[in-house]
Length: 254
Image 1: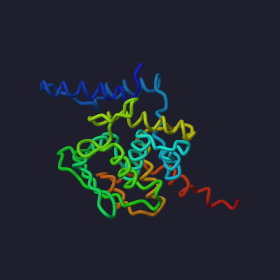
Image 2: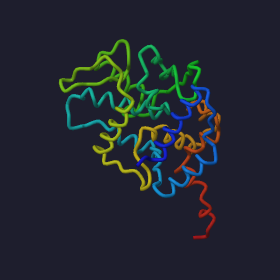
Image 3: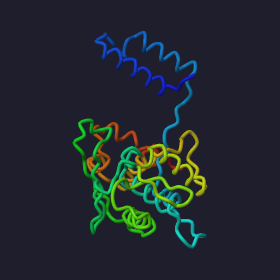
């Protein structure tokens, strides 16, 4: 049994093979649409959306292990990874693709060059800026500086594997490693997400949009940072904020 997203991926693959062979294809054909709808009714289950992580939850995720006198390499790496992922509203593929050549530390913060992304199919590249944080323990710039210094990374990928002997690898982390790191840190922090939602790296990106919306950032400001091309797509990320702020229950005299 496949999930709806798995069926959609297979449908896309079938469509691609049809087009490559010059065959007629329409995913919107009535027979395909009706079959998928029926399959969803019979076998489908509600798909959990990624929980939009708040700044407070991210603070819990990156809290250092105070019981250790020497900061572990993995702890430094994970904190830098999550803070930059959150502050930069980065997809996990973009996060692990960062290198010393695409990230520049300046006096006021970090300049990130996103070489390729989902919304940049022509690979023109885009730049975003992360200012230094207000607090030392959650500053993404300081976290990255600490990690790079401790790991002695001078060139190549920023985020890499670490073996049991505290040796840093040469290759970039696999995108799924971001998910594993997030889940592990959440278990240590005792972090729980609302029922009906799931903990996912996408929650860092969704959380940035939610927090920015709460702080009254303009739509164009958020979209410039997240690199969204469509307003409706960006606003799908605004979950908890809209529920809290826009509920008509506020109008009741209770």
